[in-house]
Image (cartoon, rainbow over all chains, first blue to last red; front, top):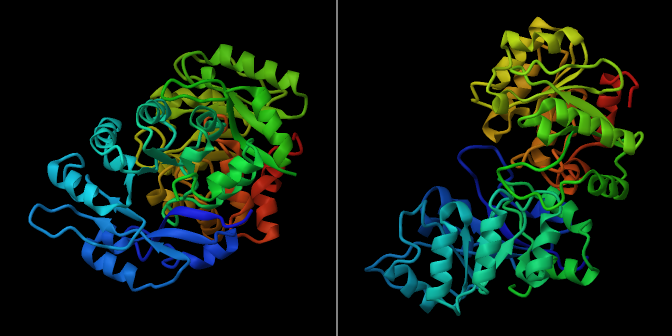
Length: 221
Length: 238
């Protein structure tokens, strides 16, 4: 399987466990060529410091996903990045407030958001406010499959990371309804598992073409 | 031999399971090389243990050698239990709202068969500490701690708690488990105390088995976890 891309990975220490801080050894072991990476400092300490550490990595295998914290009186960052991450719950801002909408409209990057950081209703509002914005929904899980499917039906600019889509044949169920192009392989490792999602990819009951599409980011990445 | 210690058939009210069927499980087991799976029917885990057990036996009969039955015991309904043709007993203290060390489970321990119980760190019904209590009371009963306590912050504690109880085992299924943690559990508790379970069809069999298949483990430890230990516990039944 060529060019396997993990759309959701972390680099750096986490406060609640002793996990590998550098994703590259596990990426090598599991055949992951590149990963979209957020620095843990941005999630568990200071977003600015984490983003600085992320940009300092300068490794073409690790594609930076800085964390955006929209602020009313700050300049909108002009980062040359393909994807940014937003944590409206953790950083206490309104994902569909005027500041966030203004920033996202100006940034021209995929907006990655963890489902636990928002709600399907907020995401639908975001997608409708900014129909040109491409949103990658991280960690959708399996318990809210009906709500996520309803959201994807209504918002064609939302893509789904499948690392936590973890009930029997749910990825095939989603692919049947939305096409493999809207499904993106990612893991959330090392906090979340990469072994199971990696194995799943090799055993999906989809065409080789669809599996390769999911493995390389659908038509989003 | 690859044995899945923790499986289900049927639907569950909390969420959509796209494929809740036994035939769906068998087709994936064939693809992955999984020889057999211990199942309880989710109807049995839920409101009707007797009917759920009947359905589980029917499924096992329809697929000879592929499914072992964990007959569900509901302590409120005093579900009739059998001793022959089963892997053991499944209890779910959280769904049944009856703590693992409650005397109402006495008929289960008296049977002497392996027991698979849902285990959930900090749950008043199934915290891993309750497993240590019950394992101490009934050292002759092999007791499988389902999900190893479920939450990652409790995995290391669960591994410590099995140390003094040779009849207590860590079963690995759950949406928060990782391949890294399976390898750590093998280091902390010994690979001979860790059992592969998937929780399919509740969860996807490929994700559950993939964690073991791709975990950073040596071949000997992986062989124990993915089947060797359960063969020993079941005394060749499988």
